[in-house]
Length: 158
Image (tube, rainbow, N blue to C red):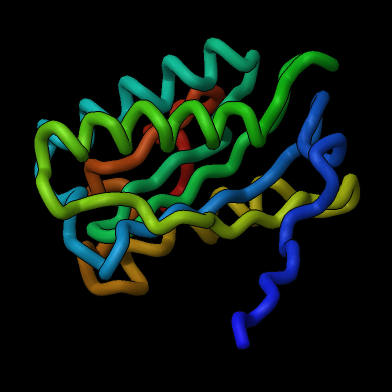
């Protein structure tokens, strides 16, 4: 008997407009992909292109060796958070197929749509703390595979 997959995503309209959502995308089989500047820059560029295309800001994006965390927020009523994720994964998945044989994204990704009363700054700080909790660095500011389209992290407290 084939198991029936249950939908774990909210209706698509929940990801449109000025909604704020955290996404986590994993590399299939936990391959360590984001461990050098050149690959990070390629994926960061594709993410920025997707954000611009769908009119979305990134409060934070952080590339761990085998997965990424992204906290996005739409800037207009036309913004589409699911669209940006599909676009980003499609473009980077194609790049992987041409340049990193045998490496790919997991099919799905995890998301959490933030409620209006949730503290976005708290989520950003939690994401920035991931490399510290994983033992990759002693201070999140020293971790190089991160970025934002909103803040200046140099002015943030450690």
